[in-house]
Figure 1 (cartoon, rainbow, N blue to C red):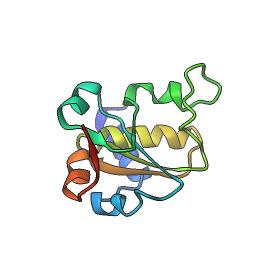
Figure 2 (cartoon, rainbow, N blue to C red; figure 1 turned 30 degrees about the vertical axis):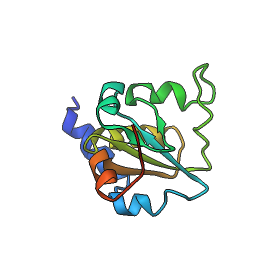
Figure 3 (cartoon, rainbow, N blue to C red; figure 1 turned 90 degrees about the vertical axis):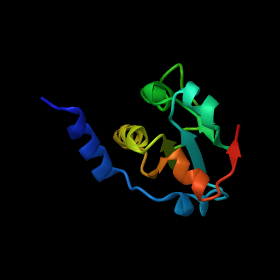
Figure 4 (tube, rainbow, N blue to C red; figure 1 turned 45 degrees about the vertical axis):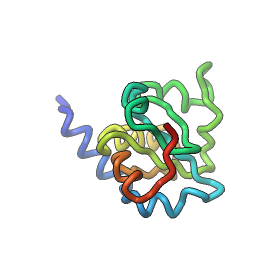
Length: 124
């Protein structure tokens, strides 16, 4: 039987993690897609990445599958995805899910505070 830490270990081993400053260096890349996977109430409190997308972790399987009626066209497999959450856990899990769905370029930024500390643009 798998436990939460098993899922986290697998996700962290599979999805590359970079710090906020490294993520910020990709902010203007043409192929970069920034996604905040936190719940809406968390974003309401802190804001989110300006120009990024808010897609809660619980919706990834529905919105990343091009055969789903809920498909979101932001999920273009030719892009590089930079995922952020509160501390890095949900972003890692979302990234692992994306990899399992055929996305090759997925990166975990970690916590939103890391983005802010690096001077990343924030939208309230």
